[in-house]
Image (tube, rainbow over all chains, first blue to last red):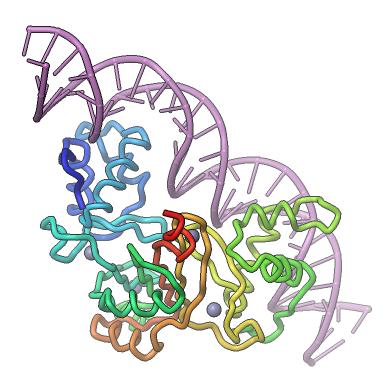
Length: 136
Length: 136
DNA sequence: CTCGTGATGTTATCTCATAACACACCATCA
DNA sequence: TGATGGTGTGTTATGAGATAACATCACGAG
Ligand SMILES: [Zn+2]
Ligand SMILES: [Zn+2]
Ligand SMILES: [Zn+2]
Ligand SMILES: [Zn+2]
């Protein structure tokens, strides 16, 4: 997680705050647009740097299959270690749930057979949520 | 998989052929550049449409975390159904292995608790391959 | 042959993400 | 206190990835 000397600075706090307010996955450029409290947009690197930091600390996740970012809904939001994230994503309405992924040990075991040592794993499961199925 | 009336046409065959030749994950714009047998590049939609088709049939996978595409190394290359793909990706050299993912049933079970019905799942595990670890 | 569906070609544009560089901040230590 | 080094920020510009929209073509069914 955090290297010695790394700080939770204002722009990082702001981006985390926006992620937590939203609750759902957010596009990076939405964060950029909403960054300034006065309605002023940020410059892209400001937000992308903050996202990189938050993800490295396990406070946020990138959901690559939809190019979006979300605050971690697990205990990592409190500052615990990064973890293998798993997401259920509704392809109809976009509703996303973070669920407990498989044990890191089982991933490591599967990877060991191929000679890999795994640092980070993301699982992205696409389908339909209950509401969208009922809506037909 | 394929809807009635869908055909394996020339551009689709060409993109699949490029994926199979390469063996490793390929960037979409690499495929675009290499599309023409005479060195002429394709237009982006030509390749993206073929990739969408191949992925839908389970013959290729998109690896979202590295924005790349790869031919399926499982039996789906022969035309079987799409499946939950799992990848081991070396962050150093880019070497990628497709491994057997968890049983679809276990994914469905985990999703059911949240009310989701899952259609497609991708697992992307990042780390270091054996060669890169030995190289230090 | 005619029609409907699926597929292609083409242009243009959109979204997503990073490189590069100068400067500011902050703790530490002489 | 002021030099130093690591970390962070602001800014400009650009690179990379993907899709919208529309016209036209191919093909099998009836
Ligand atoms: Zn999480
Ligand atoms: Zn939904
Ligand atoms: Zn596969
Ligand atoms: Zn490697």
